[in-house]
Every structure is written in structure tokens, then in C-alpha cells.
Amino acid sequence: MSREARALLDRYLRQRRELGETELVLGDRSVRELDLGTPPAVPQRENTAPRPTRQAAPAPPSEAQALALPPALAVIREEASTCTRCRLATTRTTVVFGEGDPAARVVVVGEAPGADEDRSGRPFVGRAGKLLDLLLASVGFPRATVYICNVLKCRPPGNRNPLPDEVELCSPFLRKQLDAIRPAAILACGTFSAQTLLATTEPIGQIRKGGERSYQGVPLVPTYHPAALLRNPAWVRLAWEDLQRLRRIVDRADGQVPGPSLPPIPA
Image (cartoon, rainbow, N blue to C red; front, side, top):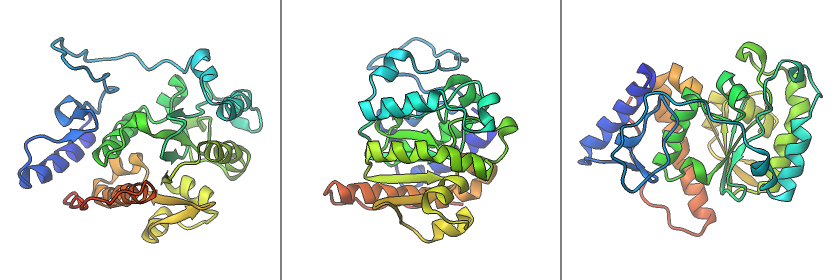
């Protein structure tokens, strides 16, 4: 576990301890079973074998998995997998289309794949991805229950920011994904995700102050990118508030009475 990730987790656990809790369950895993440094293991009823200290990078989605997609998403994926619209087609290793439940109530939209994602073909699998998994699960959205994708489907060289023409040429794939999934809510992580979906040039700090927004009638919650939280731990409290807002929106859409909000993580 990285030093930054451990600090974030320690801060959260300390706050739960102060409330009298001795164990925090995140989806179907407890905090003690969660390792931000390696991909989460598949939950098992009994598992006495020691966990490996290292795991190989996850394999790209197989052809069979791609074929199992609903027809609308399968068509979009096929189109994206052979895209040569912009310069990133010449530098990418893998097209990172997206993954998750095609009937998800929540779609998480990031900015662009990083090095880990470019190698694996999966979104949010690096350190920022592990933090995202933890934050989502803490408000009742385990990774397997959401759909995760990015504005750009190919990694910008050196993890530089997306260029305007790259966003313009690639964002139609994202919009088609959202049209096909029709989620109850969208979590827009980071500046480029929020700006693209909301057609604004405001910085993410200003966008999120406006609270709940809307993308074509779908509630949208803008928040900081998990990579930014690793660099700026003080922002975790603000992201936590955004995730509670996301939880309330989905509960409202599903006709459930939202439970009491958890207190913010202390700064």
C-alpha cells in the first residue's frame, strides 16, 4: 500500500473508530481485506491461504467478454477499438473502452487512461483506481455494480492533459456509452470529465461547488479525480461529500428513503 493511500485510509478508519465502530464493511469486503496496492481479490467465504504480495496486471477483456456486451455497447466498442481519428492511435498500446455493469445505476467518468490502464485495457486499475474503489464501496457502490469509463479511450503520451481536438474527436464514444447505459446518475471525476459533459470551461473546484448538475436530464455529480486526491489529501473530505450526494441521488431515483449522511472524513 502506498504511503499516500495508507494515510487516506488511516484517516477514514480513525474517524469510524471515534464513532464506536470496530469494523467497516465495504460492499462484500472489510477494510482489513482491502489492499490499495494490489487489485482486490475475489471475495470468498473462507480463505486461509496467504495472499500474494504481487499480482500480474489484469488481462485485457477477451473477445468473449466483448461479445457478451449488450448489442448497443458492443457496436460502440467495436468502433472504438479500431479508431484512428486522432494522433493517440499511433501511440496507444490498448484502447481502454470501459468496463462494468451495462445496466449500472451509476456511471463513473474519468479523464483518460494512464500507463497501467494502457497496458491492461481496463479503466482505473492503478493507485487512483484503488482509491476510487474504496470511496465508491464506502457509500454502497462496489466496483462490480457500476460502469467505469473515460472521456478519452487512449492514453495521452506521458499522461499529459487531453488536447481539445482529442476530446472533441473521442467524446462521441462516451456520449454513446451513456445513451446505451442510461444510468440514474453520473459521477464525473476530474476537470476534463466535468467540463466535457457539462460543456463548460470552469475549473473543477468551481463546478463542484454548484452541487448536483445534469447531463441530458441525468443527474451529474462533479468531483475531484482520485489521482488529485492522492496529491491533495485535504480534498478527500470534499470528495466524500460528493459521494454522499451521489448516494442520495440514486436512492431518490430508486424510490428509497436515504439514510442519514455519514459525517465527513476529518481534515
